[in-house]
Length: 302
Image (cartoon, rainbow, N blue to C red; front, side, top):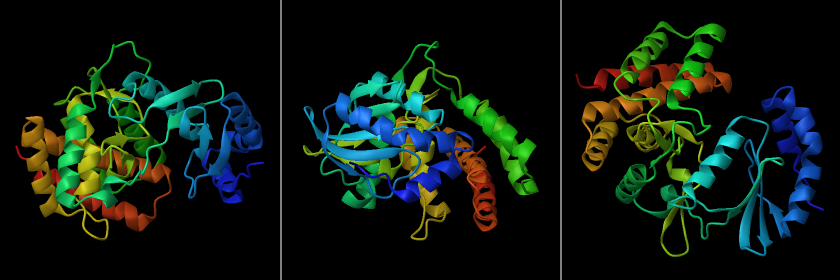
């Protein structure tokens, strides 16, 4: 019988509020249903679980990853996004069960992350190719959130529930103003969290993306998260000089103005630290984030 780690149970109870205890209580039963339904064997729990429960396993499809989504809204959007991508540059879903909130995915082998597999120069080249190639057109009726939904919800929550510094309030206001320059509701499926550790090396030398959030917006918005992850120093702090070079390169590949790329980066950075408040970031980290947002805002060309 597969044992669910105690640390994950505690984390899930804490993270999912009122839904957490009930979800944890039913997790073993859900896992058993998945194992039986999809004929899984050699099931091994993935180390260092985050908000979803993951296992490696063997199935009639071969080596797979079983993902049972936690009780959060992103689970259903990820499932739909995976179906829409259909394995195009993205890890292939082999089975999806919306009732169980479970996905059976191909296992990307060797599965080394972009961050660890190649030099920084190659990371940038490969990552920006994926930024360019991942967005696909979707119908306006597709039941996925749009970027504007993300911004409205995060910024409203920040104002109503928290008391951010004046500097960070100014960044939120600027992000709202600048969002008008990019169609936040516009008609492409975006991954929404495209960073170096979500890009894995496959057995044929190809690169596969995992964990799509599933959000609709302008294709240029896909670059924000990647730049945020790339333009840092060895201590994971914003390196503004590195950001200039990264933005210049992204703009040339995507054939967009540097201003638009800076805006996409800035909006994503502000959004990330709004989410950070909800995830109980330390005051030191939030102060650092406010300073970084202000620095990026100042760098945006007119």
